[in-house]
Length: 348
Ligand SMILES: [Zn+2]
Image (cartoon, rainbow, N blue to C red; front, side):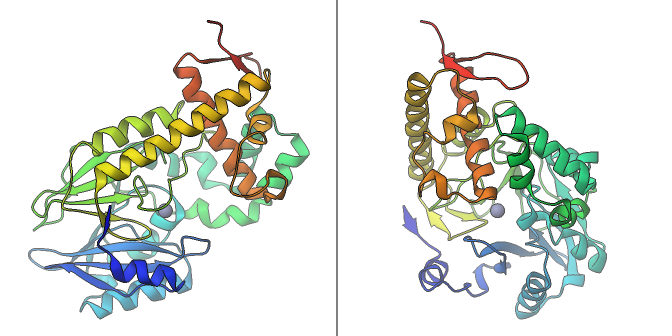
């Protein structure tokens, strides 16, 4: 892999936010800060034929994020009022968060894949109490103690910002070309990280906007959710295989830095998951009749399991569950069924 976003990579090492960069004629990246270890999301801005701007992703909704986006657009000679259309790779808050503010300031359309659009607009995503209740029920079905699940999910107030994200007014299916004049951005459905995750292949420049589907350093979180895919890891690996079969001129991810060498990167991510699946299969062999909650505690994590904080523990358990479900799809493990299924090696 070759790092092409060297300013981004340098900023990473000094724990800073990278500069706004011009990447091609009429194409820029604007980092929008967010809380947490990823520190920023890269918003891509396109100058459109006939005037105006198009964007890929909106950024995390906060006053700091809004200030970074608006000043970034000013630094390239534009403004948020110039935005005509916004393509959103997936429904997470660091990508869709600022879309509503952008739409209100500019009357731009907002486009997503129908699978993510359906989740954003669903009753459990428009009401924080329903959101919390669904998450608790889901964790209990994975083997969490009810009181622990309540504590891990936390209070509903924390989720209020997530319930008012923009519901898209345009839908993009796999293979559709986005309506950004002067560019030929083809939507590539890459489910896994979310059911409706989209990458965008720009056919004139050969660039691939990879969202969170492929990142240069971390493997994107692939987890089960109460309203998500039945086997998200199977879908993710299939989408990875498909996108990695062609080498783009450059990969422009939503986090970290731009790079070349997509095929090598997708192979490394696949190897990571196969290693994880083998480790989990051993854990199920050694601890039969376990729930995903119990199995997560048997796996190796970046720090001792007992030290995992509550939100982190949810990620770890739902990620373990995604791996369990792929083992089941491959016929290697079998479930007891019932409200809280446990898992055992499949016979033969
Ligand atoms: Zn993200």
